[in-house]
Image (cartoon, rainbow, N blue to C red):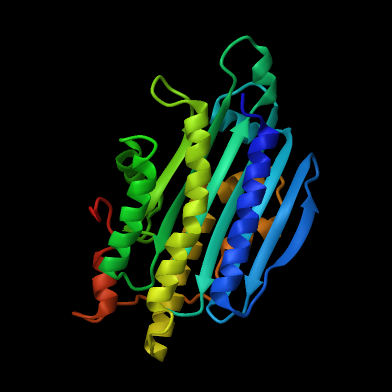
Length: 304
Protein backbone atom coordinates (compact mmCIF):
# COMPACT_ATOMS: atom_id res chain seq x y z
CA UNK A 1 0.00 0.00 0.00
CA UNK A 2 1.18 3.52 -0.80
CA UNK A 3 2.00 5.24 2.48
CA UNK A 4 1.25 8.81 3.50
CA UNK A 5 5.00 9.35 3.98
CA UNK A 6 5.65 8.34 0.37
CA UNK A 7 2.93 10.66 -0.91
CA UNK A 8 4.21 13.59 1.15
CA UNK A 9 7.78 13.03 -0.09
CA UNK A 10 6.59 13.03 -3.72
CA UNK A 11 4.65 16.25 -3.19
CA UNK A 12 7.70 17.88 -1.61
CA UNK A 13 9.75 16.96 -4.66
CA UNK A 14 7.11 18.43 -6.97
CA UNK A 15 7.22 21.67 -4.97
CA UNK A 16 10.99 21.80 -5.49
CA UNK A 17 10.71 21.19 -9.24
CA UNK A 18 8.06 23.86 -9.73
CA UNK A 19 9.95 26.51 -7.76
CA UNK A 20 13.16 25.99 -9.77
CA UNK A 21 11.28 26.22 -13.06
CA UNK A 22 9.33 29.35 -12.06
CA UNK A 23 12.51 31.16 -11.00
CA UNK A 24 14.02 30.32 -14.38
CA UNK A 25 10.92 31.55 -16.20
CA UNK A 26 10.87 34.84 -14.31
CA UNK A 27 14.60 35.48 -14.64
CA UNK A 28 14.83 37.87 -11.68
CA UNK A 29 12.93 36.97 -8.53
CA UNK A 30 13.66 34.09 -6.20
CA UNK A 31 11.47 32.24 -3.75
CA UNK A 32 11.68 32.99 -0.07
CA UNK A 33 10.99 30.01 2.16
CA UNK A 34 9.46 29.78 5.59
CA UNK A 35 9.23 26.48 7.38
CA UNK A 36 6.41 26.33 9.90
CA UNK A 37 4.89 24.00 12.42
CA UNK A 38 1.19 23.61 13.07
CA UNK A 39 -0.06 23.65 16.61
CA UNK A 40 -1.69 20.26 16.87
CA UNK A 41 0.62 18.41 14.49
CA UNK A 42 2.68 18.70 11.32
CA UNK A 43 3.76 21.71 9.33
CA UNK A 44 4.99 22.76 5.97
CA UNK A 45 7.12 24.91 3.67
CA UNK A 46 5.71 28.20 2.42
CA UNK A 47 7.54 29.59 -0.60
CA UNK A 48 6.69 33.02 -1.96
CA UNK A 49 8.02 34.84 -5.02
CA UNK A 50 7.47 38.60 -5.37
CA UNK A 51 8.29 41.61 -7.54
CA UNK A 52 9.83 39.67 -10.39
CA UNK A 53 10.07 40.40 -14.08
CA UNK A 54 6.68 38.80 -14.63
CA UNK A 55 5.49 37.36 -11.30
CA UNK A 56 4.22 40.12 -9.04
CA UNK A 57 3.26 37.67 -6.31
CA UNK A 58 3.06 33.91 -6.18
CA UNK A 59 3.23 31.04 -3.76
CA UNK A 60 4.11 27.38 -4.01
CA UNK A 61 3.20 25.81 -0.68
CA UNK A 62 3.72 22.33 0.71
CA UNK A 63 2.08 21.04 3.87
CA UNK A 64 1.75 17.77 5.75
CA UNK A 65 -0.44 18.18 8.81
CA UNK A 66 -2.16 15.87 11.26
CA UNK A 67 -4.13 15.96 14.47
CA UNK A 68 -7.77 16.08 15.53
CA UNK A 69 -10.53 17.36 13.29
CA UNK A 70 -12.77 20.18 14.51
CA UNK A 71 -16.42 19.27 14.93
CA UNK A 72 -17.43 21.39 11.92
CA UNK A 73 -15.13 19.39 9.63
CA UNK A 74 -16.23 16.07 11.15
CA UNK A 75 -19.84 16.98 10.51
CA UNK A 76 -19.18 18.01 6.91
CA UNK A 77 -17.28 14.77 6.26
CA UNK A 78 -19.89 12.73 8.15
CA UNK A 79 -17.27 10.87 10.21
CA UNK A 80 -16.92 9.97 13.86
CA UNK A 81 -13.14 9.63 14.06
CA UNK A 82 -11.05 12.55 15.22
CA UNK A 83 -7.59 11.97 13.78
CA UNK A 84 -6.58 13.02 10.29
CA UNK A 85 -3.57 13.40 8.02
CA UNK A 86 -3.49 15.75 5.03
CA UNK A 87 -0.69 16.65 2.66
CA UNK A 88 -0.58 18.67 -0.52
CA UNK A 89 0.94 21.29 -2.76
CA UNK A 90 -0.96 24.50 -3.50
CA UNK A 91 0.02 27.12 -6.06
CA UNK A 92 -1.31 30.54 -7.03
CA UNK A 93 0.57 32.93 -9.34
CA UNK A 94 -0.43 36.56 -9.90
CA UNK A 95 1.54 38.08 -12.81
CA UNK A 96 2.20 41.81 -13.12
CA UNK A 97 1.11 41.73 -16.79
CA UNK A 98 -2.63 41.94 -17.59
CA UNK A 99 -2.27 39.71 -20.65
CA UNK A 100 -0.65 36.88 -18.66
CA UNK A 101 -3.23 34.80 -16.76
CA UNK A 102 -3.55 34.00 -13.08
CA UNK A 103 -3.14 30.28 -12.49
CA UNK A 104 -3.99 28.00 -9.57
CA UNK A 105 -3.13 24.37 -8.94
CA UNK A 106 -3.59 22.03 -6.00
CA UNK A 107 -2.83 18.37 -5.44
CA UNK A 108 -3.66 16.83 -2.09
CA UNK A 109 -4.16 13.63 -0.13
CA UNK A 110 -6.30 13.05 2.97
CA UNK A 111 -6.70 10.08 5.29
CA UNK A 112 -8.05 9.21 8.70
CA UNK A 113 -5.53 6.71 10.15
CA UNK A 114 -7.92 5.31 12.76
CA UNK A 115 -10.19 4.06 9.99
CA UNK A 116 -7.44 1.63 8.98
CA UNK A 117 -8.13 -0.36 12.16
CA UNK A 118 -11.81 -1.08 11.61
CA UNK A 119 -11.40 -4.04 9.26
CA UNK A 120 -12.99 -2.20 6.34
CA UNK A 121 -11.86 0.06 3.52
CA UNK A 122 -9.91 2.90 5.17
CA UNK A 123 -11.07 6.45 4.74
CA UNK A 124 -8.63 8.12 2.35
CA UNK A 125 -8.75 10.00 -0.91
CA UNK A 126 -6.95 12.24 -3.37
CA UNK A 127 -8.13 15.64 -4.53
CA UNK A 128 -6.84 18.45 -6.66
CA UNK A 129 -7.18 20.43 -9.82
CA UNK A 130 -5.82 23.22 -11.94
CA UNK A 131 -7.69 26.21 -13.32
CA UNK A 132 -6.84 29.28 -15.35
CA UNK A 133 -8.08 32.81 -14.68
CA UNK A 134 -7.14 35.12 -17.56
CA UNK A 135 -7.72 38.84 -17.13
CA UNK A 136 -8.43 38.76 -20.86
CA UNK A 137 -9.66 35.48 -22.31
CA UNK A 138 -7.66 34.51 -25.40
CA UNK A 139 -9.53 31.61 -26.94
CA UNK A 140 -6.42 29.99 -28.42
CA UNK A 141 -4.80 29.95 -24.96
CA UNK A 142 -7.92 28.45 -23.37
CA UNK A 143 -7.99 25.73 -26.03
CA UNK A 144 -4.31 24.95 -25.47
CA UNK A 145 -4.83 24.77 -21.71
CA UNK A 146 -7.80 22.43 -21.90
CA UNK A 147 -6.25 20.23 -24.59
CA UNK A 148 -3.19 19.72 -22.40
CA UNK A 149 -5.35 18.81 -19.41
CA UNK A 150 -7.40 16.41 -21.51
CA UNK A 151 -4.24 14.62 -22.61
CA UNK A 152 -3.17 14.23 -18.96
CA UNK A 153 -6.59 12.92 -17.94
CA UNK A 154 -6.99 10.58 -20.91
CA UNK A 155 -3.72 8.83 -20.04
CA UNK A 156 -5.32 7.58 -16.81
CA UNK A 157 -9.06 7.25 -17.44
CA UNK A 158 -11.28 7.99 -20.42
CA UNK A 159 -13.88 9.76 -18.26
CA UNK A 160 -11.58 11.90 -16.10
CA UNK A 161 -11.51 15.00 -18.30
CA UNK A 162 -15.25 15.29 -18.86
CA UNK A 163 -16.07 14.57 -15.21
CA UNK A 164 -13.43 16.86 -13.75
CA UNK A 165 -13.98 19.68 -16.27
CA UNK A 166 -17.68 19.77 -15.38
CA UNK A 167 -16.76 19.67 -11.70
CA UNK A 168 -14.41 22.64 -12.18
CA UNK A 169 -17.06 24.65 -14.05
CA UNK A 170 -19.43 24.18 -11.13
CA UNK A 171 -16.85 24.66 -8.39
CA UNK A 172 -15.04 27.75 -9.70
CA UNK A 173 -18.26 29.70 -10.02
CA UNK A 174 -18.87 33.05 -8.35
CA UNK A 175 -22.56 32.70 -7.58
CA UNK A 176 -23.16 36.28 -6.51
CA UNK A 177 -21.65 37.51 -9.80
CA UNK A 178 -23.18 34.77 -11.98
CA UNK A 179 -19.83 34.19 -13.66
CA UNK A 180 -17.04 31.64 -13.56
CA UNK A 181 -13.73 32.63 -11.99
CA UNK A 182 -11.97 32.05 -15.31
CA UNK A 183 -11.97 29.50 -18.12
CA UNK A 184 -12.09 26.58 -15.73
CA UNK A 185 -9.85 23.55 -15.93
CA UNK A 186 -10.28 20.37 -13.93
CA UNK A 187 -11.23 19.77 -10.30
CA UNK A 188 -11.81 16.61 -8.30
CA UNK A 189 -12.21 15.61 -4.66
CA UNK A 190 -12.51 12.41 -2.63
CA UNK A 191 -11.12 10.37 -5.52
CA UNK A 192 -10.73 6.77 -4.38
CA UNK A 193 -9.94 3.40 -5.88
CA UNK A 194 -12.76 1.79 -7.84
CA UNK A 195 -13.27 -1.33 -9.92
CA UNK A 196 -11.53 0.27 -12.88
CA UNK A 197 -9.14 2.67 -11.10
CA UNK A 198 -6.46 1.50 -8.66
CA UNK A 199 -4.84 3.51 -5.89
CA UNK A 200 -1.58 3.41 -7.84
CA UNK A 201 -3.33 4.92 -10.87
CA UNK A 202 -4.85 7.75 -8.84
CA UNK A 203 -1.51 8.45 -7.14
CA UNK A 204 0.33 8.56 -10.49
CA UNK A 205 -2.40 10.80 -11.91
CA UNK A 206 -1.98 13.20 -8.99
CA UNK A 207 1.77 13.43 -9.57
CA UNK A 208 1.42 13.84 -13.33
CA UNK A 209 -1.10 16.62 -12.84
CA UNK A 210 1.33 18.35 -10.47
CA UNK A 211 4.10 18.11 -13.03
CA UNK A 212 1.85 19.44 -15.80
CA UNK A 213 1.88 22.87 -14.15
CA UNK A 214 5.26 24.00 -15.48
CA UNK A 215 4.90 23.10 -19.18
CA UNK A 216 1.39 24.58 -19.22
CA UNK A 217 2.15 27.84 -17.47
CA UNK A 218 5.55 28.57 -18.95
CA UNK A 219 4.01 28.24 -22.42
CA UNK A 220 1.22 30.68 -21.58
CA UNK A 221 3.71 33.13 -20.04
CA UNK A 222 5.96 32.90 -23.10
CA UNK A 223 3.04 33.61 -25.45
CA UNK A 224 1.98 36.81 -23.69
CA UNK A 225 4.71 38.33 -21.52
CA UNK A 226 6.20 40.57 -24.24
CA UNK A 227 2.91 41.99 -25.52
CA UNK A 228 2.44 45.73 -24.87
CA UNK A 229 -0.44 46.81 -22.62
CA UNK A 230 -2.14 50.03 -21.59
CA UNK A 231 -2.96 51.60 -18.24
CA UNK A 232 -6.64 50.84 -18.90
CA UNK A 233 -5.79 47.16 -19.31
CA UNK A 234 -3.86 47.26 -16.04
CA UNK A 235 -6.91 48.70 -14.28
CA UNK A 236 -9.04 45.91 -15.74
CA UNK A 237 -6.51 43.43 -14.35
CA UNK A 238 -7.09 44.86 -10.87
CA UNK A 239 -10.85 44.59 -11.40
CA UNK A 240 -10.55 40.91 -12.35
CA UNK A 241 -8.31 40.28 -9.34
CA UNK A 242 -11.12 41.51 -7.10
CA UNK A 243 -13.33 38.70 -8.38
CA UNK A 244 -10.54 36.23 -7.64
CA UNK A 245 -10.33 37.51 -4.07
CA UNK A 246 -14.10 37.28 -3.65
CA UNK A 247 -14.15 33.63 -4.67
CA UNK A 248 -11.27 32.62 -2.43
CA UNK A 249 -12.70 34.35 0.63
CA UNK A 250 -16.32 33.31 0.15
CA UNK A 251 -16.34 29.90 -1.53
CA UNK A 252 -12.93 28.22 -1.60
CA UNK A 253 -12.99 24.93 0.33
CA UNK A 254 -9.23 24.90 0.89
CA UNK A 255 -9.33 28.30 2.53
CA UNK A 256 -12.14 27.18 4.81
CA UNK A 257 -10.37 23.91 5.70
CA UNK A 258 -7.14 25.72 6.51
CA UNK A 259 -8.83 28.27 8.73
CA UNK A 260 -10.96 25.70 10.55
CA UNK A 261 -8.01 23.37 11.22
CA UNK A 262 -5.85 26.15 12.65
CA UNK A 263 -3.55 26.34 9.65
CA UNK A 264 -0.94 29.01 9.08
CA UNK A 265 -2.79 32.19 8.11
CA UNK A 266 -0.06 33.64 5.86
CA UNK A 267 0.06 30.41 3.88
CA UNK A 268 -3.72 30.09 3.64
CA UNK A 269 -4.18 33.67 2.39
CA UNK A 270 -1.17 33.51 0.08
CA UNK A 271 -3.65 33.11 -2.78
CA UNK A 272 -4.90 36.68 -2.51
CA UNK A 273 -3.58 39.19 -5.06
CA UNK A 274 -1.23 41.99 -3.98
CA UNK A 275 -3.48 44.68 -5.46
CA UNK A 276 -7.15 44.51 -6.39
CA UNK A 277 -9.81 47.13 -7.08
CA UNK A 278 -13.57 47.26 -6.81
CA UNK A 279 -15.05 49.77 -9.26
CA UNK A 280 -18.62 50.66 -8.46
CA UNK A 281 -21.18 49.27 -10.92
CA UNK A 282 -18.60 48.66 -13.67
CA UNK A 283 -19.99 48.23 -17.19
CA UNK A 284 -17.78 47.04 -20.02
CA UNK A 285 -17.86 49.05 -23.25
CA UNK A 286 -19.94 47.34 -25.96
CA UNK A 287 -17.70 45.52 -28.40
CA UNK A 288 -14.62 45.78 -26.16
CA UNK A 289 -12.18 43.03 -25.22
CA UNK A 290 -13.45 43.38 -21.68
CA UNK A 291 -17.01 42.66 -22.79
CA UNK A 292 -15.77 39.67 -24.79
CA UNK A 293 -13.99 38.29 -21.73
CA UNK A 294 -17.13 38.62 -19.61
CA UNK A 295 -19.13 36.77 -22.26
CA UNK A 296 -16.74 33.80 -21.97
CA UNK A 297 -16.91 33.50 -18.18
CA UNK A 298 -19.65 30.86 -18.45
CA UNK A 299 -20.09 27.23 -17.52
CA UNK A 300 -20.14 24.52 -20.13
CA UNK A 301 -17.92 26.01 -22.84
CA UNK A 302 -16.32 23.20 -24.84
CA UNK A 303 -12.69 24.26 -25.35
CA UNK A 304 -11.47 21.04 -26.99
